[in-house]
Structure formats: structure tokens, C-alpha cells
Image 1: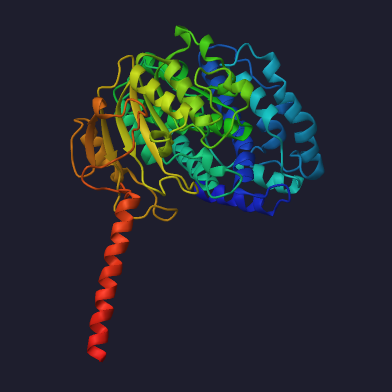
Image 2: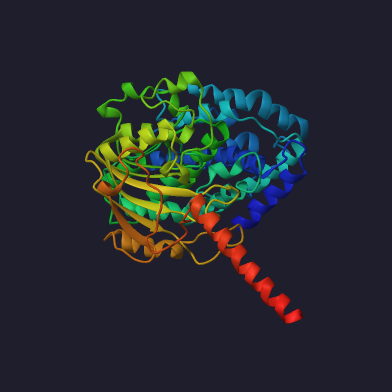
Length: 485
């Protein structure tokens, strides 16, 4: 049923002049879903308070609650269309009153870790793009059909929302940067194996895929106490995101997964000076797929000891610095990081090998990231001791990956199994750090069994081969002439 509701919403948005892509559909669905969720949350809290004989103070004033402006009900439980706004009246209320009121919560909130702050932040970053108040009324009626009551309902909604995020990868406007394949994320989490009480951080969290999957992993990993559940809700997951749309989607995604007030901050992580990071700011685990290919301004580069315009390289420095001693990380990065010869790349590889134990490099095949024409690797490392040996694994699903044939969990099972023992195989091998060139710190993926590594021939070898072919051709021509004579 929920799947059909989502489809109906997208069909209506498709007709509206203000929404032109899957990104718009997800953005507009997100703020409406958020307000519907908030209404359900407030109703649940009010009911619990009444049962306990307490008075509940609502977050929103009566006029701005979903049940007042969006979905006033008749006694039968159906929407009272005589009382519900529609057309220009509805659009003007949303744009002129609702959004400014909700944005005001940011100034009134006691801190960034509160639901009030999230409300203010979200509605200061996005705007209503639905131009027709009649389309908006239709969408609200559909959204109102969604229920957030049970864990089963929330679970189904979170899966549908994940599907919407995945579809954005094919929608242009850099939609793919919001989506890291979930099988890859789950494999990374299994390698790092987080425990209750450890903090998990993503400084470029996008749609919060790493944080949501980590939450699911920890929630299902053991029998949790009430204290454990509070720890998961409030003191485990932390994220930062620069882009407004990604921030909104990330917050909504975590809420649908069951985290009421996600600890996600809307900020450019790279504007923070590395020298200012103190012990209290550090985390046990970092999981991230930082944006690559971007260029940061010189004033941002001033915050880092190794200065470079490459966004991903700045993020890698940030992640190393923000890990606690003994902390663990899994970072997706372009595979050219392993072999680039520019000063920043060499210096960064040296820093990584000397300050961390880079124990595993997962080489991902082309097509792992749909819509992105780059090859990537995943770096797994622990902070605090230098690298002695690097275990490489060359992922080969045995087929071409793409939209219709994406990466799946089974593709990564052999990697997860062998990684526990750093086991050699036709796809995996170890390299002693002493064998790595101490000038370039080149970490190229070079499978001793062949794999994909291309051996480059010297000019002399090429000329010798050409000469041999010429000689063979001359011999063949001579034979042919003899036969024709």
C-alpha cells in the first residue's frame, strides 16, 4: 500500500510546473513526510503523557499542526474538505506563514541536538516548489494515508525512502553523490564491527546511508537494554553535511530509520581548522564516502597541513585527525589516490602509512557507483600505529555492474570472509610496507596473480616487437610471392 502512495505522490509532482526531476520529488516529499511524522510523534507523546498523568507541551502551535492546516478530520476519520485549505489559499499559507514560522524554531531552540533546531534548520534550507495549490492538496491527502505508528510501518517507509534516494542517482544535478550502494556500506560496517557505546561519524553524510545502516546493524546485533537504546538514539551517530538538499534528506532518512533527533549539523566540514580539533571532538569510528573531484578555495586549504584543492584529500586529513587513538575508519576514495605522483598525494599516503595502520584496501570494479565514471577503493585503517602490512582485495562480481545489475550483498561475502584472516587468494594478497617505494609511497593495486594490472612495456620492447612483426610480415610476403610465381 505504501509503495502505491509514494508512486501516486510522484505522479502528482510530475504534473506540477515547479518540480522537474527526481531530486525535486524527493525534496518535496521529504518536508511533507517530516511534518506528518512530527504530528504522529507529538500525538504519541501526548498519549503517553496523558496515561502517566502528565501535561504534554506541544512543539507546534495549534494553527501549524498537521491535523489543523493539512488534514483536519471529520468524526469518521476522513479529511474534512470543508475545513482543509486548498488552491491558492493553501499555497499562500504554506509559503507565507507555515515555512517562516517553522524556520523561526532555529533561533528559539536550546541547542542543535534538539528536534526544534532540526525543524528550524530544515525549513530554512528548502522551499515549497509545488506551484499549484490543488496539486499540493492532492499530495497532502496522499501523505496523510501514511502511518508512522508501528515499527513495521516505519521500516517499510524507510525502505521506500531509500529507494527514492537511490533513484536520485539517475536524475542529473549530481543526484548520484547522495547515494553510496548499501551492500558496500554494509560490508564496510561488518569489517569495522562497531559496538554499543562507540561513536560513529560521517563528515560528508549526504543521505546518511552510513549512519542509518550502522544504526540497523547495532540495533540487531544483540539484546539491547533500555539504556543501550537511549545511547543509540542520542550519543552514537554524528554527521555533517554541506548541501541543503542532502542535509534535509539525511535528517529525514535517519528519522524514518527510527532516530528522533539526528545529530546532523548543516555545515561545511572543511572550514574547520584541523588544529582546533580536541580530544572531546574525536570519534571511535569514521565511515564516509567524501565527494571527490571538487575544488576547495585557498582559504579553506589553509586549514590543513597538506594543502590541496582536491576535496576528498582534505576530507581524508580531517578523518585521520578526528579519529580517537585506536579508532577505526572505512573511507571510499578515488583509486588514483593510490598512485598519483603530485606532492599532496605522496604526502598524504606517507601520513596515512606512518600515523595509521592501513590494513585493508578494497578495490571496487567500475560500475560500483551508478552514474559515476570513476573507479574507487575503500581504505580501512586504525589510528595510532604505523602500517606494517597492507592486505589488498580485488572485487570481481563476475559480471558488468550497472543500473540493471547493481552490486549486491552476495558479491561482497567472499571479501568479508577473507578479510577477517587477511587470507591470500587469486583475488587477494598482502604487501609488506618495506616493499613500498619510500619516495613515492605508491600503493597501486598490483595483483601478483594477474588481475587487472596492466604491464607497461618500455619503448625499446615496443620497437623490438614492431621489428619482429615486420620481419614476420616480410617472410609471409616472400612465401606468397613464391607460391604465385
